[in-house]
Structures are given as structure tokens and as C-alpha cells.
Image (tube, rainbow, N blue to C red; front, side, top):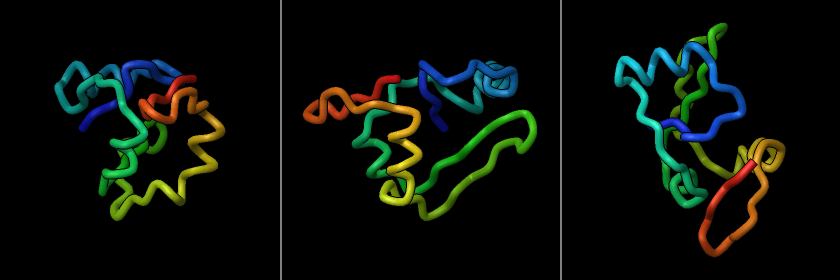
Length: 79
């Protein structure tokens, strides 16, 4: 599994998962999100929650809330 290098919050659970090599830090592009088949959320209260059959269309508003697409040609997401 990969997780964004830059996150909204640098949580302790994420740090533990990275330290234990469960997660790898990586820049995540919009194209990567469009092509993924699974997506997971993570926090100290719910743990690691896998969303199977993930489709980016259903998360468009979520993405717009947390990210601003500044260069659609490069598919880069920034806060």
C-alpha cells in the first residue's frame, strides 16, 4: 500500500504503518487514483479500512474538498 508523502495530518497510526513497512510514502497522482481498484482510509479510531471496487467518480467531492487540482495535464494534486 502507498500513502501520500504530504498528508492532511501526520498521524501516529500512519507513522507506525510506515515504520513497519505496511505503507510506503509516495506522491500520488490523479491518474493513479483513477486507475486504482482498492482504496483505504486509516486513522487511530477506525484502523485500516479497505474500500474495494473503488471508483474515483464517487469521491470527486471528497477530493475537491481536500485537494485543489492545479495542473490537469500533469495530474498533480496539491493541498
